[in-house]
Image (tube, rainbow, N blue to C red; front, side, top):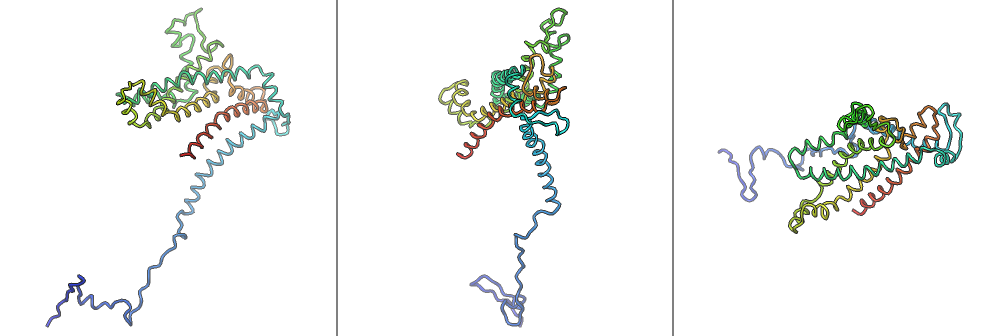
Length: 338
């Protein structure tokens, strides 16, 4: 007789001769099975030595450069502001206390005009490029045709360096062959308008070029803020019967409070660090003096007065911190509340 497999109906398992030949675990005479060895997770090396060296270089080199070129130089400028030094040998450094600041505030005929020009620079950037950039952002946020092309065209001056912008606008303001004088007919002998050399005009001419660039920057900031506005707010305002201007004034603009704060801080910093555009125009002379120009002229000018130039840099630093610190404090408070 041949052996037939038996099938259990209670458990749903089938026994075969091959299965019966394998003894169950724990049967006498059989060796116990070894459990698989577990490797402790804490002893795994996630990064090789080469990875650690690469990460160390990628994080360490920028950190060292930042500390050396930003923090060390800033602290050195603060220390040198209380000294006199011509830059030749460290033995010539002499401690003078507050003498540089007293001379700066009372005897320098260029200091207060430079402060006034920086204030004018800030006022112009707030009054002209800010509303113009907001207007362009609102129009481009309507998803009109060729909006990408318009954004690129308006933002293009931002990616161009100030030096290049200065050279371009020098051609525009050229008294003989410039665009403006050619259009208004002031390119003839006896009728020239010297936009760069005239102390009553050159500051405003430079500010036009600076506003042209700054408008595209603010447009992108406001456009990013408008993209974050909840569409349901517009729909609710339309259901209430508000027109486009009422919707923007009462609904959209209040939601741009954080963007307005960023725009204000960026504009203040832009007004304080203005340098290269003015320097390309006329070297910061004849009515275009700025604090940054005075710092450069005293440190790397013909008569190097590093201590005096550092004092002007400290004044510029304190003005910047007076704006940046309140902004950082308010930002950290909002993050803690959220």
